[in-house]
Image 1: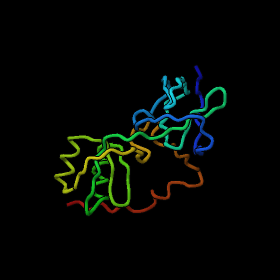
Image 2: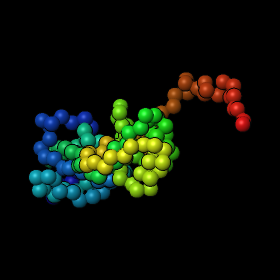
Image 3: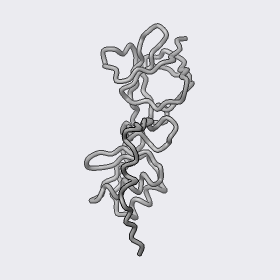
Image 4: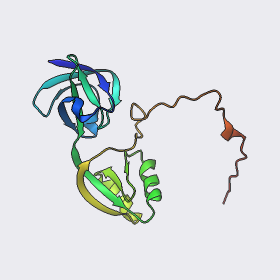
Length: 165
């Protein structure tokens, strides 16, 4: 059985020797036995847990690349006249969220659905691939930002105007 210890980013369709369809949770892994859509088993052994994008691929020992396809999963399509406010409420609950121009997509969640309906959002259940913004999990879901010493704490020099009501 082939072992994949490396991920290649931004692969092209022509590079892929095989494909594997994974849902959002399935694209979050470190060590796991997987089976390609073509039926070949392989073992993923990565140095750390990663969150894989739909444009990533597993590099097998023999050099072949298994492309990742996002699997359709049960989502809620959220629409509202003031989407940023709704996105804020979703983000405040550390819920992964896919942000589109006219709507938001979140994983199906009855509690959150109830809250969003109370805020006046329209909710439509649907099946679609889920590719949220680099999410709120911290471990692996977000990319580390390297802070340059040159770009010092400019924001600390501004006066803070806090209005207390």
